[in-house]
Amino acid sequence: MTEPQYIDFRLPLDLIVEGRGREVATARKGINITVPEAYGDEMTDDVARSEVLAIQRLLTLSRHAPIRVVWAKNIASRVLASPTIFPLLAVLIVLENASHEIEGLDEAQVVDALETARRKLFKERLKTDLFADTQVVICADSRGRGNPPDLYGADGRMIAREDFEAIIEELVTRQVAVHASTSSAVHWSSALATIVSELFENADTHGKSELSGLPIRENGVRGLVLKRTKVERAKVKDNAPLPAPIEAFELSIFDSGPGFYASYMGSPLELGVDLDLEWKVIHACLERHYEPGLTDIRQGHRGMGLYEVLRALQLLRGAIEVRTGRIHGYRTFMQGEFKFKMEPATSTTRPGMPKPQLLDVERKYVAVPSKHELLVGSSVRVIVPLH
Image 1 (tube, rainbow, N blue to C red):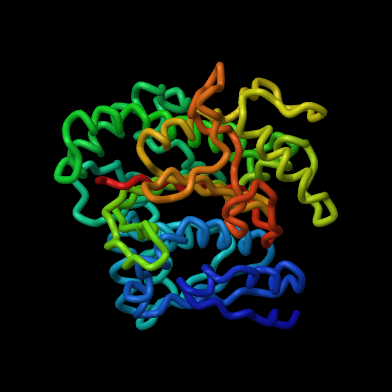
Image 2: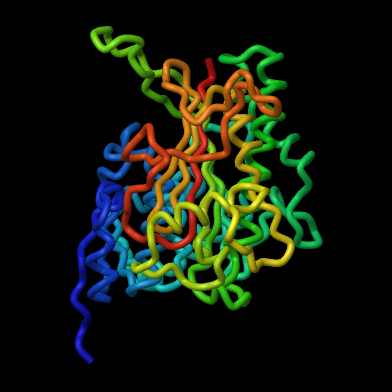
C-alpha cells in the first residue's frame, strides 16, 4: 500500500483561511501539519481572535484524513510543558488519528512527551489567577476523559447554573477588577453565567454523540476557552481616527458533534440542503420556541435560549459569533456599533430588547446567510469589553 499524498498545513495561519479544508474533504488525502518555531509570534491579536474557528476546522480535517504533525523543537517544548495555554495545539495533542514527530526526539521520547502533556491537560483545573492570558479546558469524550471536575460533578452530570456563576464571578473579580467596578463585576458574573451555562449545556447535550445517539468513536472533543484579549472599536464618524483597542474578556465553546442542523433534523447536513432552511433550523435550535413548520426530533430539547444570551450581551455591550455547518452568524452590542434586529420602544413585551436572531458575518447588517465551508460540530465565541 502506497503512502498517501499529504496536503500541507502550517499553523496557525493555514487553519484561519476559509476554504482550505475543501482540498482534504474532496480528495481524502493525508494531512501534514507543521507547528513552526514562530507559532507564538504568528498568533497575533487578529489571528488569536479566530482561534476557536481554527479549532473547529482542525476537528473537521481530523474526520477526513490521517494527520501527521511535525513540531519544531522549541515550540514543542513550550507547548507540551504548558498545553492548557495553547488551545488550538491542545486540541491537536488529543486527536486520536494523529502521529507526531518532534525535532531532536526519537519515537519513544515523542510518545512519552505527548502522553505527559495529555495527562496535564486532563488533570488541569481552571485558574482564576492566570499567569498567561489564555486557558483551555478540554473534554476528550472519545478518550474517556470528557468530564473535567471543574465542569462536572462526581455523578458525571454538568454542574448547576449557580456553580457556573460562582466560577465566572471569581474569574471576573480576580482577573478584571482592575478594569471593572465591584458593581460591574456583579452584573458580569450573572450575565456571563447565563451565557456560559446556556452555551456549554448545548454542547454537553448535543455535541458528544453521533446522530445514532452513540458516543463519537474518534476525535470526540469539546472545550471551553477563556482569554483576555483586545478588540477594535468602531469609528464614531467615517472621517474620525480609529479609536484605540480596548481590553476584553473572551469566552469560546466548541464541539465536534453533528452540528446544530443535523442534531435538530436527525439527518446529516448535505451540500444540497437549502441554505435558508439551514439558517431557519439553526435559529430553531437556538431559541426555546420552535419555528413554525419545523419539528425537533430530540427528546428533552428546550433550546439554547438565544434571547437570554443576547439580552446578557446587551447588558455587557458584548458580541457573539456562531459557526456551525455552513453558517457563520453574529450579533454585536459593542459601543459605537449599529444596532439591528431590536424590538421597538413601543413593544408590549420586550421594548428595546434584542430580537432572537443572528446576522450574517459576511453581510453584516442583514439576517440573510452567506455560504461558508462545511464544518463539523459548532463553535460559539463571546466577547465582552472590560471598560
